[in-house]
Image 1 (cartoon, rainbow, N blue to C red):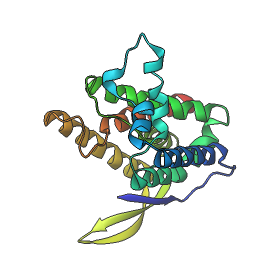
Image 2: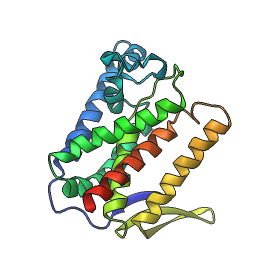
Image 3: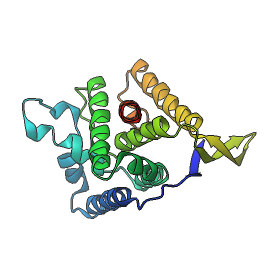
Image 4: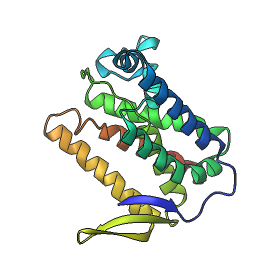
Length: 214
């Protein structure tokens, strides 16, 4: 299932959503245009084996890695999800709290993935953990919103309006299943995807959303 749009857009201008899309796009441009893209990634991506909780410089990649991406499909899919679900969450959380929440969810996702692979030398990068937090918060705030979704059926694709909780739960359990499979098979990730960062970000977003909604 792939979401195309939600049926209830926010009534306010999505300032931070647009700022985050612009920031991610700009950093991706810097990454691509760098004389040494591998060095650029090495400097700013989260590499678990370098983390030392007594040394602040080794912890900053928990933030900087959220603005790096591994390719055009990676950044386009992330920004697409942020655009669809972020405006409602930004409006509900408020102008001041939303960007803090976004970075918090991304950091939580990175921490969860780190604890599964603390000795890995493979760079972790991408906004997926932060955006997973946005998805979790969306499910906490708006579970009954309808999401226009591309759904495979009998070898074809059809577009259906589905409840947000169904679409997002499907996405969450897909990440959880793939993350568990990567642990069972003793690999750090499947296809280079940090699935537990998605799980950690989503749970963080859902918990924060529930606490704010109560």
